[in-house]
Image: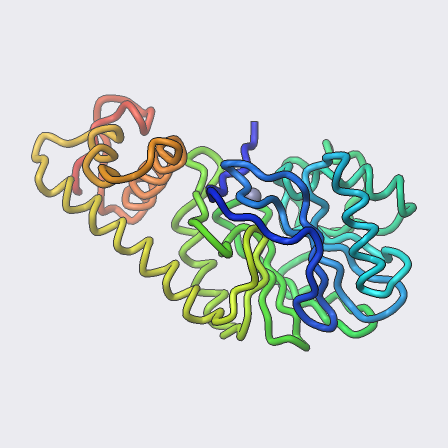
Length: 293
Ligand SMILES: [Zn+2]
């Protein structure tokens, strides 16, 4: 199972919106506790044929919205599909889009779920450049939320398509099993180096001050890490994930607990990899007792 781990509640966005002359958003029609207002899918470029970046989850209501987005963007077709990563709320609409608009190249960073997508994938790598009329995309390999995650610089807009690494609202959760918080933090630093003016996230509205938002994300993670270390410092016999969680996330709404629990686990695994924490009483990170190293 590969749940989409984005948590945002209570925000709605228009189905179709133009964020720049070369960027039109079609909302995936898959709102929920894990996707917020739904997955943003992007029509990119200024020509008759555009790049479609991400495809939503595969719900029936998405296709009419995508058709409207093509209309409003002033284009007639899709020349290629680019995917930020393999999670189902980004790839689930692939089959329906290809069926409706015809076969076209599908590009992403290779990942473990690619075979299940049912189409040939043209592999993208760090630094790959994809050009269409009016838009140039440059891929940044930015793992951590997912092993196959790419962000894309939209050169003409000085903008970063951030996928699930940076969101317009809420916090990206790093899945304890398949994610990697250490890599994620490095990916945030990588994104910061691009100094993007704007960020186009996979969930939530356009972010107008890209650099400030990335700094906020980094600061938030470091704060959580300090809080977790403080709990461990106060627990000479060690503490379990639920015990740490109960202290750090005391004020959190119940609906967000499952994802926040994964976040504690991801932090502990990161601290362990950095030789700053260690576990005893078993391998299972949730059952184990954790202590500062
Ligand atoms: Zn994701």
